[in-house]
Length: 142
Image (spheres, helix red, strand yellow):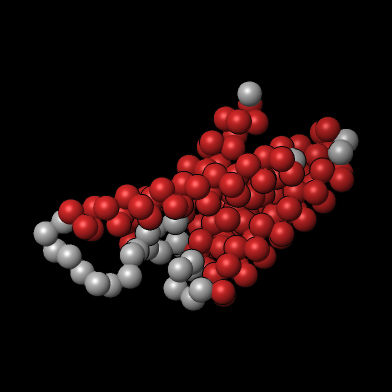
């Protein structure tokens, strides 16, 4: 998803949909094996909360985030939510920090480039979402 977003600034929702189905089935099996049905409920609620918040952010500033970013957030949230609220909060914090760092790098690259433009900065955000998830997983593992 990150590579597709970098190349085309599009996130194929069908691919995200299949990922959500696969992850939900995997979580269902895990919760049944662990005899923790409430864990699946927690994961689904955290995913809805994260997707809803990302959708709200996308609606507040149209064009900054797309629906593909919102759906990708849902997919990653479903994967991370099994680790709990703390991991989700760390992930959101990292998304903000890494997003700001990525925007700063894009801005610096644009300033140094020979083709300066006054257009808005453009950033593929799915790689930031995934990088933040990796950082949150590493922190959760510590």
